[in-house]
Structure formats: C-alpha cells, structure tokens
Image 1 (spheres, rainbow, N blue to C red):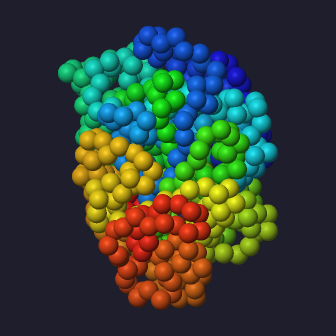
Image 2: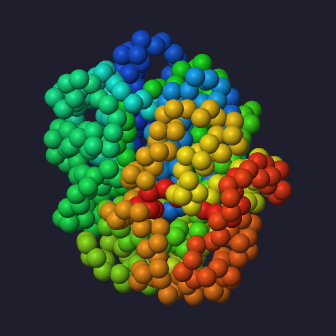
Image 3: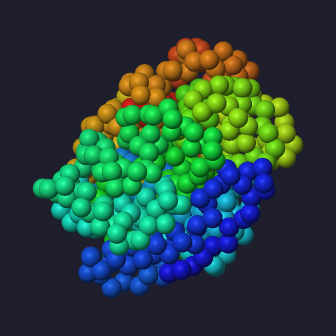
Length: 517
C-alpha cells in the first residue's frame, strides 16, 4: 500500500505556498491501511488492486463549467443511488470530485508539474492509472441515510480528513486517530447517525474537537467563518482536497456486483478538458454526458466570488506576481498579498499559459468569462469528436422545478427515480454545497448588484458569450434584457442534433439553492 508518489519541487517563491504537500506518500500509505481496515469491518475479501473499478458497466460524465451548479447537482445524483430497487439503474459516485485522487496518482499539480487541469490519452499511462483506480476503488459507492456502525464511519471520515489536513493528520498514529473519531461519534450519536445538514455540522464539530487543527471555516456545511482562519491561505497552507471541504455522510462502498450493474458518475468541472483521458481509462464502457449549463452571468459572478473567497478555491500557484484587476487589487479578509501568487481552480492549458507564461493583462471578469466559455467549448467539441450521447440540463430548471427536472434527468440517462433522490430534490433549496454566500434564495441574482455587474453587462453586450450560449440552448445572451434571465420554456425532453443525444430543456438553466453558486 506504500505506493509513494514523487512530488514536484516548487520554486522558492511558492515553496511555503505548498507546505504540507510533501507528505503525499504517507497519505497514500495511511489511506491504504484505513481501506484495509474498512474491508475487515465489512467482512469483504475483495482484491485491493483497483481492477474492481474496471468492471463498471457504464460511465456518466456530469460536464459543466466551474460555478455551474455541479456540486449540488452531483449530490442530488449521489442520493439517487441510495435506495434503488434496480441495481442496473443506479448511479455510483465518489463522495467528492476526482481531483484529489488525480493528485494522489501523480496526475495533477503538485504531483504533476503542469499548472493546468487538461489531461489526454497520452497521460493515461499504466502506473498512474493503476494508482488512480486503486484510489477510486476505495471511494466509489453511494451515501446511506442511517448508520449504526460508527467504527466504519469513523474510518471513512479519517480517510477524508487525510485529504483535507494531510500534513497534520499524517503525523498522528492511525489507530489512535480513528479511535478518537469513533468515540466522538458515539458521544454525539448514541442511537446511530441519521443524515441531515445539522448532523453533518455535528460531525464536523466532533472532528474539530478530536483534532484542534481542523478549522470549520473551510467546510461547505460550516456556518461560522472565523476571520483569523484566513491567515492559513496567506501563510501558504494547502490541502489535497480543494476547499471548501465536504463533510461526507456514511457511505456504502460499492462491491464488484454493484459496479458490474451500475453506472459510475464522474463530476469534476475540470473534466471538460479530460474527456480523452477518461475514455482511455475506461475504454470498454459506454460513456454518456450530462451537460449542465447555466446563465454565464451567474457563473461568471460565482467565479469572481470564488477567486476572492478567503476560505477556499485558490489552488494553483504562480511563481511571478499576478496582476488581475478585481482580484489582486481586491482587498478583503487575509489581505491581498497571497492573491498575487494564487490562481483559482479549473484552469485549462490555454488560460494558464496566458496568465502564467505570457502575463497577459486581464480583469477578473475577463478571466472568469474565459473559464466559462473555454469549458463549454471544450465539452461541445469533445462530445462531437468522440460521438458521445449528451443530455443537456439547464441549472435554472433545477432551481425552479427541481423534482420535475430530476425526473427528466432520470429518464434521459435511464436511472430509477429512487425515493432518496426524490427526497433530496424536495429539499434542494435548503442545500448548501460549495457556497460562497450565506444569503438564501437570491444568490443567483447577486451579479446584478455586485461590484462586477457593469463589466459583466458590458461583456454580455459585446456578444462574447453568444456563439457558445446559442449552442447550449440559452439563446443569444446579447439579446437578453440585461436584468432578465434567459427565457424559460415548458420542460420537455429534446433530441440534441449535434450529439445525437437525448436532451432536457433547451432554453433554461437549472440551479438549486441560490447559495449553491
């Protein structure tokens, strides 16, 4: 289990920035040991070589731009798999995005030198892919609403915390760390754990009591943000999982039989630039694309918020000082010095080169607009090139008619409308996943009154988005009244001509709780 990954040395200007990233090998070893403990608890004797994942019947790719609503949509789809009666119509997922596992496999910065998220078939070499599949094998499954085996849940939490606080937790003895977590869970949940937003916060608080280095400010379910915690970013702290961190519920780890009959969901927004890589990793499986689209004004505003969010999202170092108007000159908690050497997540090769090598002068709104446009252009091009079936879902539909849209998604990619999925859909507006604001129900409209609103309006008027927005079914953004959303049509399943796929709505964008930006 001690498959150590060589870590790229980072130049002096950003060495402190990546403190804690040099314990990758130890994290791999500890996660492997914890996985073996989980298998003992579960009474399973399956091989731990990653080959189980290759049994997956089908791949479903949730493709979107960053801040496109993918986090909360993915959680909705996670719960679809929780109580399906037909295993062949169940989605199996990872508790979070694929990025941490790519890092542990040597396929993403800092275990890979390149500072962009693109991967292609040439990157799908045997050794890193084997490490990736081994990592995924220990995570794939679905959430469960109730768990009385708190020793198992504690072990699952330990593995997740290793991704979030690698340097600190890796210094502790594994047996003692898991014992502390199990004891804290038994005190907090003497009758067993039943999943809810409040109970996840209790789990977070229990973890913080066990390990004082854990800061709830950096969790998506946390409700308190401590200003002093922003010094962690200023001092160069890093993690394997990107902040804001998730606090996962108890998890059913998929068996070989589950994978042979179910569909595996991949949901990282940066997969917009990894289609050929995943095709090389899963060459025998049918791949379906669930293309999540959102009003670019909302996504660009969400990206601007993410870049300036002092409790997370900045994940890529820059050796030379950046000068991005609206970001490096945008003062806030933690100051601005740290921003000059950090890029936001989900950066493609082209944008990375413009910012890090060519030092092009761009405003934050321009950078975020490119993030949205580059992602959707790549998704459209790759779907066409690889002839993949594509179902289009507008995030606005999930916001306005969540249960109805969930049913349409299930029909489009042949999933069971499970009770757990429907229950999540009914609670959609109360969900907080990867939020940058604590304001409920209005976050999708905050672009209208933000400091970036005039530049966003000007960019829309310039027709910058039009070519892509038309192809996504959003219509010409430049023709949309500046304070209005794109027109909504009655929900219908449509045939996507460019990808010969079943599509959901053409003219609308689905988003859940507005705070789930």
